[in-house]
Image (tube, rainbow, N blue to C red; front, side, top):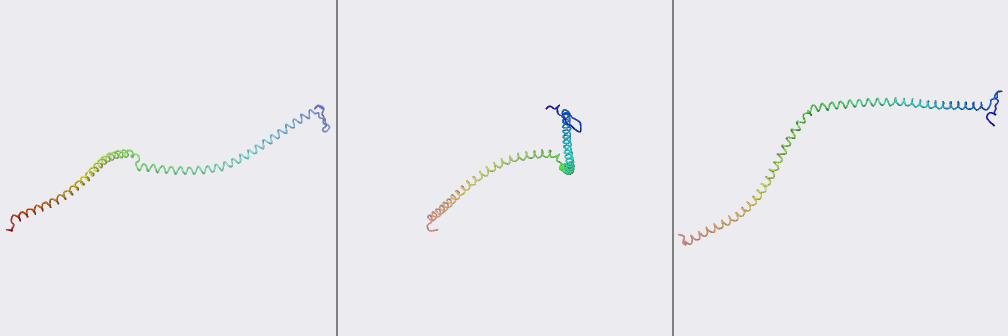
Length: 177
């Protein structure tokens, strides 16, 4: 059975199979178009809702951004005041003239270092003299002790000589006349 052989009777009108196929194709295309349009409008509605939500969130973010901008502007003003104060302090402390002062301090430091080198040399010489002096003192003390022994011996010899002269005088004059 072919499509041309089919006939349908609708309200007394006979419709051939080819017209049914054309009508069915047209109806399915129209139904598909309606479905696609409904899907499209559904997506548009969803996008519109999403855009509306984004707009409301954007308003919230914009409010927060304004708050953040105000906070940052306040901080920036505070920093500008701090920088201004620092610049004033630098000007008051004459930081610009520090270069010449530092050069002068460098020169003074070099002079101090040279004097310190001389003082270290003098210190070494003084240490050598103190060592020599200590050795000399030890030698002198030893000589003094040796002289003390000689002095005692000389005193004893002097006494022996005096006693010998006294004995000779006694022998020369035995009667004491």
